[in-house]
Image 1 (cartoon, helix red, strand yellow):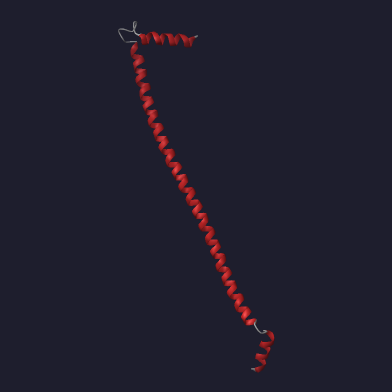
Image 2: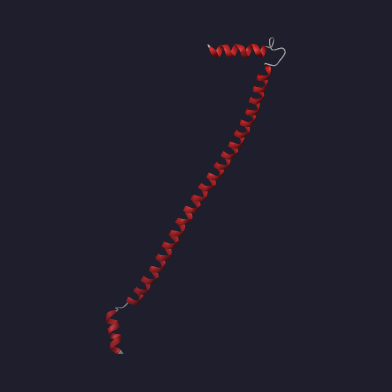
Length: 115
């Protein structure tokens, strides 16, 4: 038994066990620190993506609102144009069409466009 102890004392100098323990502890601490850095990186990426997604969602909703407003305005314009077309078509059936200032104006417009 003494021989084994002498061999161990010769193979592992004083402080060797402490150094090995310190190395193991340092290794575990470095792994934990690396894991924390990876976690923090993913957290930052997630926050950036979340902010970008929220911004994109707001822009999408604003675009939808503008699109709906434009669609409503288009419908109103279409209705007004249809009413105007019906009114112009009905001029030909009016009993006062020869004296009507609108008819004269339309004739002037059509002659100007032909020139």
